[in-house]
Length: 363
Ligand SMILES: Cc1cc2nc3c(=O)[nH]c(=O)nc-3n(C[C@H](O)[C@H](O)[C@H](O)COP(=O)(O)OP(=O)(O)OC[C@H]3O[C@@H](n4cnc5c(N)ncnc54)[C@H](O)[C@@H]3O)c2cc1C
Figure (cartoon, rainbow, N blue to C red):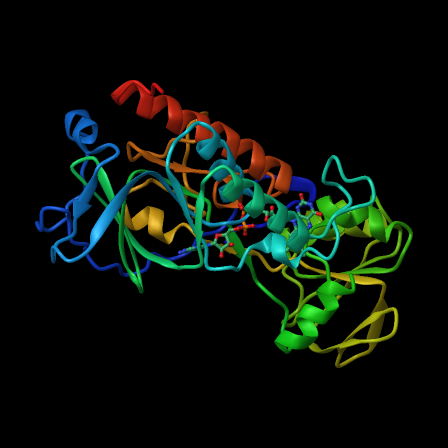
């Protein structure tokens, strides 16, 4: 699991499990279940810009300079850079970007009146496509590397690429609510997931934090710098706070209430959280329940991940698998649009420079 912002902003906690993936067919029909640990530049050189027959011989397959998995702020930023480096790039996206949930962001630089997540994503998609990037609404189910070439599988077939960028993000754990009520609460700012992003908006208002342990403690303490009215509610029963955390919260004036929470209801301007003992009305509720890091594809491709499940990268966003890069929430970081974009710019430039080492990029 990954915990977001709070007092330990940018740290990555917890882990997610690896999925089973099918071995993919290679271009020459051999099994590609073995990881390729030794890229072969000469073969890459030969393949660049060519179209190859698939295993069946029926389909012609493009070999992309880069396949980006994930069309959120990280993946789309990389696509813009890569396309403008005159590289061929395709983005696979299954349309579950965290950014798509943002009703309006006020901390994204350059938009003093704010911008919604869907609007930002639409602008970025248009920008990437303007320079020739292909964007496809498909979920990638497997990535394998063989002889320096990546094979990506989705339900509609197989694609091939010289490099891959993982920009798959994370999924927040949600409170127990019906999906429609959840989405309405997020859209109205009654439910918020990111104090770094929008703590300012709850300044001096009554705020609830749903969580316990270190995650709940950190988020409640972080929000205390915006308002003196913070309540930390345990979702499942008694709080699991260390003595020092409990004392710290008492000293800060944070109210600590045991659960279990039995209902969450939306009002005109408030969100009401009820336990068996009483109910609490907040201007906003912040779940601090952790996240699933979407790094399973990277793990199955042989990339090293941290104990928490974040993809390990170097300062150039390279993973432990040559030709395989990662950026955005799926790697350790601030879990912010600005950081996702910055990492993606670095990743795209590394991809360009690494490809150029194999074969000069000239017009
Ligand atoms: C409610 C809310 C409000 C927020 N407000 C702000 C804010 O104001 N400012 C700010 O800076 N940040 C904000 N954030 C955080 C911000 O949304 C994230 O940091 C940002 O979206 C991370 O970008 P990303 O590209 O790494 O991941 P994401 O935006 O999550 O995109 C990942 C993409 O990968 C795709 N994907 C995953 N697996 C696959 C697969 N196997 N095949 C194909 N596609 C796949 C997903 O569908 C998704 O589209 C907010 C988050 C939330 C939830």
